[in-house]
Structures are given as C-alpha cells and as structure tokens.
Length: 230
Image (cartoon, rainbow, N blue to C red):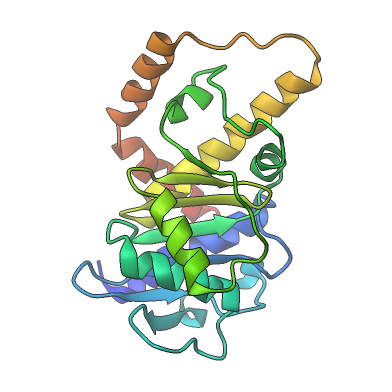
C-alpha cells in the first residue's frame, strides 16, 4: 500500500476515534509503520484534535532516531517510538482513552470476562498492565509496555487506557472497537448488581477461535467505518 493510502487510513482511524469519543482531549496518539523493512512510521503531531486529522498532518518518524522531534508528544515518542523499534508485528498502534475500557482498567479486577460473544473474542487474548507508575514519558516505560505485548495484540493499560496493535489499521481498529464495546457490556452487567453469567472456558475459547477464523471481517468493518468520515 502506498504511503498516501496509509496516511488516509490512519487519519480516518483518528477521526473515527473522535466520533466515538475515544480520545482524551488532544493527548492521545496513533501510529502506522510505512513498510515492514524499516522502522519509519507515521504518527499524529502533538495537541491536534483527531476530529480534523488528515493524512497530510501526520509526521513521518524514524523509530531508530536518537532524539524526539519537537512536534511529537513525549509520551507518544516513549510508547510508539519504542514499540515500533522493538515489536516488528506492531505495524499499527492505536493508544487512546475510551471511556469503558478506561473505566475497566481502573477496577481492582480489570479482566475482561467472557460474558457474551464479543467479550469472548478476547478470552485469554489480551494483556493487562497492572503496574501503572505515572506518565509513560521515558524509553524504559516504553520497553516495559513492549514486553507486555509479547504474544498479544491488545493491552489494557491499568489505570490508563487501551492499546491495540495490528498488521494494518483495520486490524488494530477492529480490535479496539470491539474491546471497547465488550468493556461497555461488562460494566453495564456489573451495574445491575446481579451475578455475572460467565461463559465456560471451552465455550469462550470456541467463540474466540470463530472470530479468528474470519479475519476479513475486520477489513470490511474498517472500510465501512472509513466511508463515514471521508
């Protein structure tokens, strides 16, 4: 895919994040590697509202650079620059503060329990960072987060927010969208005060595998969502 189309996809994901209320003011960040061969990646510049983000607004950065560019947020550089450098499969990284996943991350037990077929998609397929230590503003913190992503594409950042990775924007977006919806369902169920009817492990695993058996769904989902903001 050309860089122009990559820029279009990433900017569309940003505008969709604004539409769905996932962004935290102008503080969140999204990024996308331009090729699998090197460590160059596109990312939004600091303090720009995602609602008006366009492909031409994205900065082209090098994860191997020794210094952070002045127009890039310090936490964005610590997280995205480090993860792109250390986790090659993280071609796209979406890190935002959506309300339901963020609320879930603040619970003593932040596990996304499989109570329906959407939450079951993430059964044993998401990592949880339980050691929030303040702003992720240094490489050591980025390295710690990169380590938590080993074998996972979804990271619930305790007391913080949500991060998803993917080979494409569509893959990362689809996982982000469904995790946020699953978190909403779980929190609504918690709010009733009644006991949860958690799916049996074998049923949850079967359901998760069914999701994995249709990867083209995520591409179609993002394509439809993208049309709404073009």
